[in-house]
Amino acid sequence: MNDNTTLTRSAQWEGRTVVWDRFGSGEPVVFLHGTPWSSALWRETADACARGFSVHLWDMPGYGGSSKEPEHPVDLGVQARLFAHLLDLWELDRPHVVAHDIGGAVALRTALLHGAHYRSLCLVDVVALRPWGSPFFTLVHDNPDVFAALPAAIHRGVLEAYIRGAAYRQLRPDDLDMLMSPWLDDAGQAAFYRQIAEADQMFTDAIEPAYPTLGIPTHIVWGREDTWIPVDRAHRLHDLIPGATVSEIAGAGHLIHFDAPAALTAEILRWLISRATNSRQTHEP
Image 1: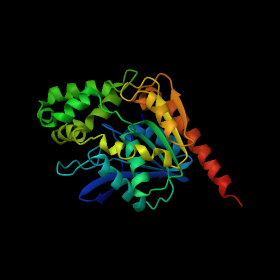
Image 2: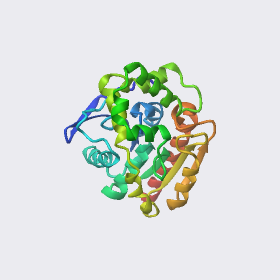
Image 3: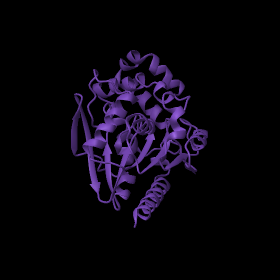
Image 4: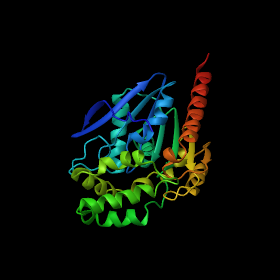
């Protein structure tokens, strides 16, 4: 994983600080991360895409380098409203969008409820269909104050076990440290449990009936060994979204970015290049 994960720009929105960055040139591509991750999870793929596309990365409020004030909600509804704002701020009319985990729900809500237009959509092991939330996720959701008060050493152990459970292969120590570091200080520990407490299936229930109306070229990519969100969700989404395509990646779990980074990057590049080529051919006189 590329060590250059720092985002160098920031924007203000409803009292929050949102860190973001843009690099490369070509048709715009925006990456959305999930929970409990940040845009750093996408950096290796984003660097590869930047050779032919203008790449946008950002950390959702409550995650990564963005602000984590306890008075600011970080639910999926808030993140979707913010994403719509960022697309306007960046003056992106029809970007390609690539989303992982809850980033998928954010991208879908932004399109279906806030009128965003995407050139294409790539959904990678996304939160989009009921039911979602592991037993641990549910336990934290119901008792966030108890978990936020855990001694730091116990919190670290809980966090490490949780993150390791998302990967199919052994995580390298430096990758594990990168994933854990935003959640280890006092503010990070509280933010980690707060974002779980604010997760609610109602945010996907509200849009699930509209998936057949999506009207966006959509490709679904899934780690075949994902235990957080099993691969059957990929095929359920495929059946709901008109014209969608689906690819499974063997030997990869929910943290597909570490389990199969080359295969994931190749699949996303193949999709983006095909959609960019299709777009140029469609608009040629």
